[in-house]
Image 1 (tube, helix red, strand yellow):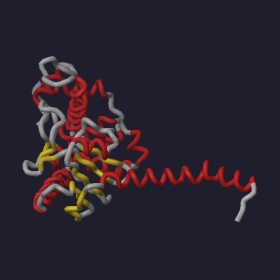
Image 2 (cartoon, rainbow, N blue to C red; image 1 turned 135 degrees about the vertical axis):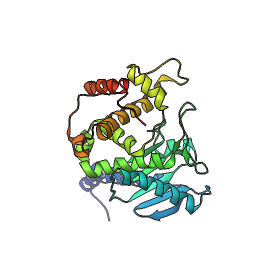
Image 3 (spheres, rainbow, N blue to C red; image 1 turned 90 degrees about the vertical axis):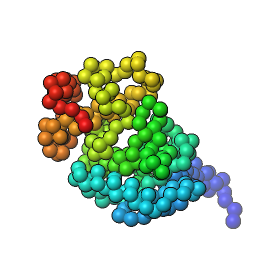
Image 4 (spheres, helix red, strand yellow; image 1 turned 120 degrees about the vertical axis):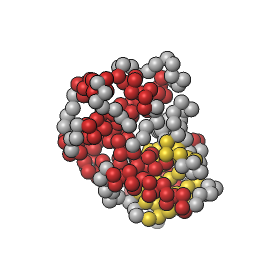
Length: 265
């Protein structure tokens, strides 16, 4: 079958403007959804959680179950009820983590991928039950705490809806997730002293300022959330719906800490 010049131009137009972009889009979506599973094996599939680890990783079912049960306890303590089915991917190295997250989260411990319902973890130590810190000055965090943090982000999207979640202040989203996890990367006493003295950094810290800034922001977000929900006893709905004056709120917390009325445990 031969095509005339007009038909050839029409085919070329469709290929250029419609078919090729669609193929590229599908390829990208496939890559986004399946890329993180390359080189992994499934070791747990229960209660809407599917856990994948590196195919060379030797980890017992009991270890994974213990992590999930501890995480569930943290979620239940804060009334977190998840309905979504999620895939948890544990990377064996920081390089693998960077590649599977497309180098978007180099100095993080895990990332919650909105599309694909995936939570990808940086290297963990299953023997000790911890996620390896990004810097020696930080604490290795319990796996269940980091998992609870990331699962809470899924709950936040579920509760608020995609649009409201996207518009919500970052400190609320990260603060609530840290509040649920009941854990921080930073030393609580050190971070609290810096907060009270209105400092973001101290030269005595044996860590680069740019690396410290992220965890310290998470700490301050957790501090504000904990203060409002646990100390002030506001409801969760009020927490999400109220537009707080951050500067005023932080000054109020400083006074409460200085007066020994409030302390983050």
